[in-house]
Image (cartoon, rainbow, N blue to C red):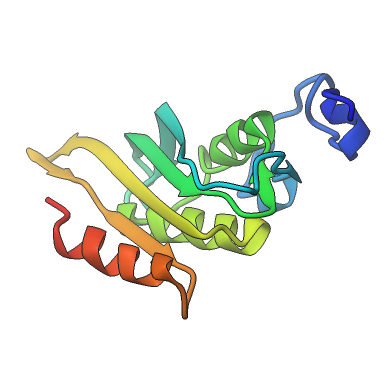
Length: 153
């Protein structure tokens, strides 16, 4: 089996980087999880996430944390970077950004479990840290989602 991700039809990896000016979920790409025989966590941190306040147009800055347990598909990291960058000129509230990111990744990968946290820097003296999670319905991961949500700080 080749370790070259280009063999899996990926377009962004190794190509000249093109940044979208608008929200662009279509840039997300996946590859096959080679370790489907056991569960493990994958975590991404994006400490330079930027979006715009939909009311004032002022920039909002955050660290976005994504953790998931993959099944068959995994998100390719460069495409994730391009996707998160596409929020830069997109106007959405903090809570909406976190939920949109989670839903787009669920749609893309169908993970067993995923959680997304936004650690937004203060505006007007208040920090907002929205958190959303999902566990595949009808599985132990649904219970994991309930437990992690109930104990989330």
